[in-house]
Picture 1 (cartoon, rainbow, N blue to C red):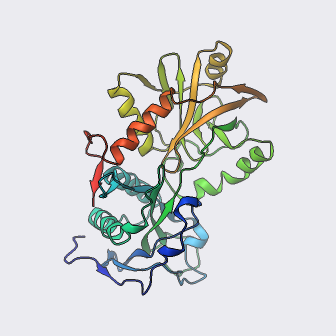
Picture 2 (picture 1 turned 45 degrees about the vertical axis):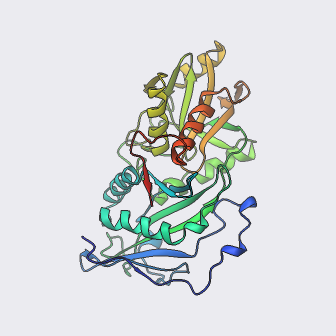
Picture 3 (picture 1 turned 90 degrees about the vertical axis):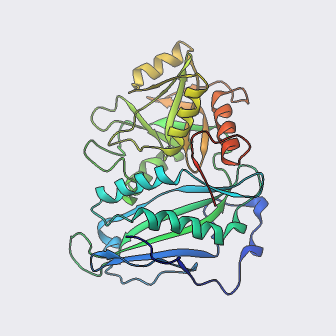
Length: 354
């Protein structure tokens, strides 16, 4: 679908901006003034509109509530040092969004609606972008099945929504993780690579069990044999072993992380060795016993970088060296932040300045 006119905007009668304490933000608790809505029915997407942020009115029979057709993306917009606004890596996020929708048999949002919708919405609510360090405007595009029907079927109707929210960084301190060898997050041929709701809902129970034992997150292993590391909680994961960054490759069970791709690109350009390959539990445990593992960290949109201080393998805690500004993860994060905020040249065309 091509947009024939500018996206229509119905502005909020008053802003809630003054209600927000930007110095004490809570992740996922505050929402900007507006949201974008675009509906799919009669086998086509219709004109998007931006309206005041508000609750949705949906039938209890809405298919998304019953059969799992719900897909989302997680993105960020940043305040640049000169006051301009940057939406980070829209193209790559759109590509992943489209792949997730296709896997869930859902109508794929046209790229023009996705891109122009994000730019128009972010520009409208740009005053909501925090100026504090390590903060950003989180962007949540998502699609739900909206057909009112009772029965297991692919929906004929969908709603695309984007809302935005000012957020702080998460995992401000190094975290403790436990290797999971009983429950699984994803299996070969499944939806592990897609950002669909079921992937996250199914992970809650084992994650809660780990938290009861004093851990922050899980290190997921492969579903077949529980021999190879896949992801860390809701993030990709990287290990510095010797002089090499080792990280599990993207696959049908491992999310194709945008932050991961960005950090690996920066690491390669800084002439660090990068090895995207399967990493077994045996190899990881041996690296600890041989003192060859220097650091480990989760990477993702919300956290950017989450240093890991402890990894529990088969009921044994292995501890990593104390995190410092000399760590590779810190250096990569700082360079990424400089690019996002315009303090360093964007050689990769990652930044979309609004």
